[in-house]
Length: 141
Length: 197
Ligand SMILES: [Cu+2]
Image (cartoon, rainbow over the protein chains, first blue to last red):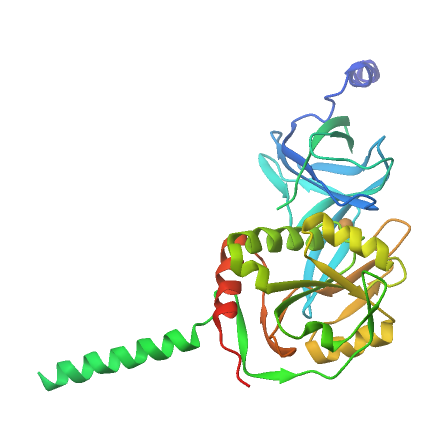
C-alpha cells in the first residue's frame, strides 16, 4: 500500500509542467544589462517560500548561458570578495533576496549579447522539481 | 546680552568653519592631500598613461575588472547618474576605471566597456607590478580568486572610490554602498573645493 502511494506521488510530480518547486514564488526577477561583449551577467530576484519546510535550490541553469552559479559578495579586509554558494535556502514562510551588493545569480558566458527588453530563461532545481523563471534584462543603476 | 552676542558670534564662526571643512556624506578627505609618484600604465586608447594624465581635473578612480558582474557595472552606472546630476560641473570631473585584470582586459575592450556607461569615462590597466605599486600609493588592493567565476577566475578588489585632486594628489575616499544622490552631493562638494598651490 505504502509503495503504491509513493509511486503515485512521484508520477504526479513528473507530469507536473513547469511549476514543480512547490511553494516557491519568484518576484522582481531581472538581469542587469552589461556592456557588449561582457562574459558574465548578474541576475537578481526575490524568492519566497510559502511552505512549512526550508526550500533548497540545489542548482540552476539556462539555455542562454554556459553555466549559472550562486554567488555571494563578502566585504573582508577592505576587499569585495565574490564566493560561490553550493545552494540557496529559502526559509519556511520566508524569503531570500538575491540583490545587488549582496548576492547574484552569476550567468556565465552568454550565447549572445543581451539588451534591455530581452528575456533570459533560468531554471531553478529544487528537491521537488524545476521552476523556470523568465528574467527581463534591464539597464543597471 | 554679552553672552548672547558671544554665543551668536561663536555660532557664526563655527558655521563658517563647518562650511569650509564641508564633510563628505559617505567618505572622508585626508587632512592633507598626499602627492603620488609617477607611474606607467596603458590607457584605453593603447597609449601610455602616467601621472600627468591626472593633472588639471578632479578624478574619481574606481578599481575593478570587466568580468565583474555586479559591483563594477553598478558602481559605474551610479557614477554616470551622479555625474549627470552635476550638470555642467560634471564635465570638470574625470572618472577613471583602473582594471586590475590586464590578462583579460585589453585597452580596446576596456575602452568599449567604460564608454558603454559614459562617453567621457576613461580606463587604464598595466602590468600587475605597476598596478600593485599604484595600489600601495592610492590605498587599493586586489587578489585573484580562482574559484569565483566558473572556469575562469574572479578578482577580489577594493570597492572604495579614490579621489584625486587636480594636482594629481590623493585627496580622499568615498565608501560604498553608493547612491547617485549622495555621490552627486559629495562630488559636488569636492568640485567646489579650492586646491591649494
Ligand atoms: Cu559572481
